[in-house]
Each structure stands twice: as C-alpha cells, then as structure tokens.
Image (cartoon, rainbow, N blue to C red; front, side, top):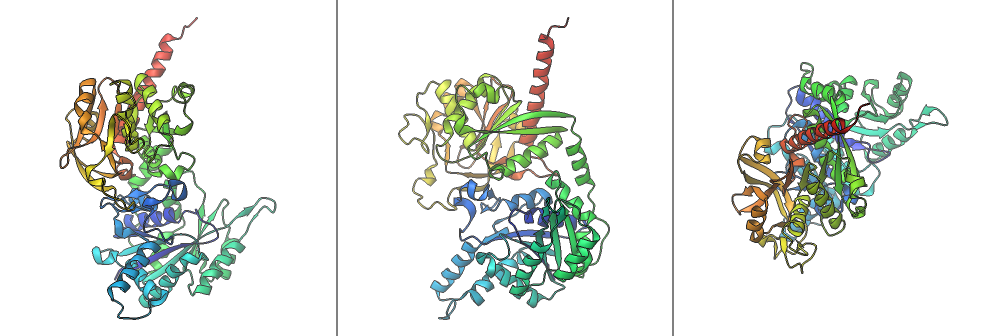
Length: 547
C-alpha cells in the first residue's frame, strides 16, 4: 500500500516547504524507496502560466507541457527524475473539474458543495500518482500557510484522507518558524504553538514538526515544543539556516527525519542512505578551484525566484567545472549605451534571460551588441536568443528597425515572428508551444560538442520563433542555425562563427539541469567563461611592465 506524507506550513510563507519535501524525498530515495513529490497550490489560477514572475517566481515547464510551480524544479533537481502535470494541482484545476462535472450531470442533480465534492476531487488528485506508477511513498506539499482561507479545503482533505487510510499510512509534517528575538536573546516557541493550534482546530494533529531557526534548538526547547504541540521529542526536527539548499538533505539526515518518518509509517528500516554522489557534489561546491563572474541580463532580476532554475543551473555547471560562479544581476531596462562597459566590461560571460513583452528589450539588444563586438562568451535563452537575432539583423545585416512582431507588429523586418499555429489562438493560458520537442544538431557546432550527440529533446515555452525567410541572409553573414526541429523546420539554436563562444537557444535548458546531471550547455558556457577569464588574466600579466 502506498504511504502518504503531507507537508504543511505555518507562521510564515517562504520557509522552504519545497526544499524540506525534496530533501526528505532524496533521503528516502537514497534508501531505495520509490518516491514521488507533488505540489498543491491554493490559488484559483488554473496554473502559474499567466502569472507575472514578480507574483510567483518562474513558471516551471515539464516534459509533457505543463506550466507548474517552481517547487517542481526543486523536486527534479534533487531526485533527478522528471515530473509531469500530475505533480502540480491548483484550486483552479480542482474547481474547473468539479464545475465541468456538474455541467455534464455527473452529480445527478445533487447540490454541489465544498464537502464532499471539492474535497473528494482533491483526495482523488492526492492519490492519482499511485495509480500511474508503483510508488511506495508520495509526498504532497500544500502551498501557503495553515490559517489561510483558501487552504482550508486542502487541509480538510488531508484530515479525511488520514482517517480513511489510517495513521500508519498517512502522516503530516508541519514546517514552522522559531524566531530569535535579539533583544531578549532567546528563541520563541509561541508562534509554533499557535500554528499547531490552528491545525488542531481543523482536526489534524501533526506527526512531525520541522522548525526553521537561526539558532540551535536545545533539548529544553525541544521538550517544550513536544509537550505543548503533542508530539514526541524525536519528532521535533531542527532546520537551521544553511549556506546552500543542497546542505538541507544532510541536515535532515543528521536530525534523523527519514528514520522518524519510516517509524511512523511502519516501514522497514533499510541501510543508511547512499549519498556518496551528493556528498561529492557538496565537497566540490564548497571547495572550488577557480572563480568566474557571469552577468545575468533580464527584466525581473529584483526577484531571484524569477530565474530560479538559471541560478541553480549555474551552481551545477560551476561544480562540474570546479568553479565558483558569481552571478551579477543586471536589469536590462536600465542598461544604456553609457553604462554598457561599466556593467559588462569586466564579466567573464553573459547570459541574456527569457522574458515576455517589450520592457527592457532594447537594453538586452544593446548588451548583446557589446558582448558580440568584445568577444565575451554569450548564452541567450528563449527571448535572449531572439534578441541576439534582432541585434545581428540590425547591426550586421543592416536591416533597419528589425524586430520581433511581439514587440513591434509594424516592423519592416520581422526576423522574429509568431508561429503559424499560434496566430489564431486567443486564450492565453496553456496555449504556447509547451513541453519537450526534438532538435537535430549540426555536427562540430558548440551545441553538438556540448551534448556529444546530434539528437536532443528540450523543453519549450514560447509563441514566437525565428523567421525562416531571413535564414539565408543570416547564414551568409556568419550567424548559423545549428539546431533545427525536424518536424516543423524551426530554428532552435543559433551560433556565431566569428566568436569564441556565442550561442542562443529557443528552448529552456535550465529546466533540465540537476545535481547529478548538470545541463551540458551550462557546463559548456561556464567552461568558456573560465577559459575567457584565464585568457584575460594572461593578457593583463603580459602587458604589465615589471621594473
């Protein structure tokens, strides 16, 4: 029988439920259990595809084309296994399904209510993964915090499911905050007590408390929390702040979270988790042999979660190159001709990030011109690749006012244009070119050397594409298409011949980078940045006079 673990949060948002869920899953996976993680979000949007990144961080896309919560990225990066649309469920999806059933007459004239109709659909979704694969343990993270009105149907569904399955088959882990008051010089447990009280009022007794804290929890505090929250002392788990999220599995191992979970689920204890690869990764992460500075040019740089997968991919690629990657965020909207050298001149590489709409686009284009002319390693993703094509058209092909029709529908040279099968689409949500598509690579290209194969599958999220009417002009001038979708002849990768490292991709490679399998394009880009850095140092050394 599949076992279920529910992860809820209290006191404050952004405590790291996704990281705790992924870390526990990693420990259980390393013990040999087949584990899946899913995220239930209480907002009414059907998915985060139409949400502004400032609202919700990046939109993570799965192989099957689902636009999902960014926590699914953590799940994939930690477990090294792909997720799907079944791994992310929102209130919007739940109500959409129930209302469609009501319109179809499925409920046979019954009054449709939150209980039992909404909660039944939530419970069905909570158990759906067990029907698609032979999972032994399914971890379900509930978004938001206990006490939020929108979360109540999810919490009630957990209460019902725990009663139906039995306490040995379903447990609740409650993540909470133990704040440290500097004036009093002590940790305070009262917020956690109130959070647990809120859960108890809904009918749920948490089985395990995971306590985020800046300071260590002594035994006295653990006993106090156990007594007032009605859990065993070994069920009070300390989650101290760490320097990297990749430390969290090791911290949870030290706190024996996995052992406590297995005890409560009546699962046989196996040998200690096999975490040798993880430990090796951490060792290389914390002991780099060199350092590079990479500029991340984008329009949402104020919020790191807007480019979460890119930041994590830099970490993976840095470890692969024994290199610390220092990312400098550069807001494209405020880049000007006068600030280009100051902002970009001392960098070892620049990645121009994805993004929709016209805000900040000219800053991206100006940045790419500076990078191209000064031979700085360049990596463009999605709209970043499109901006590279626009820049080349304007400044090398001399096609005045060349642009994307997304930004300027009257451009005389639409080098980037809407895809033919997107022209008649009016609905915004879930209608882009989404998910994994095939790409054929040109031999001896930067991309082919990075992947070590000619055939790849990568995830997409876009409506606009390189306009093949300009294909011949670009190639004659030195910007070549090195990746083509074989089904629709779409340009997926562009590279510049007269440049040490210049590549733009229409897809999102950052969505497939994991701890165990860093994405080859990020690894290749950081290697190019390392080589560039070394070359710059040698040039400075050789031109410095010694007296």
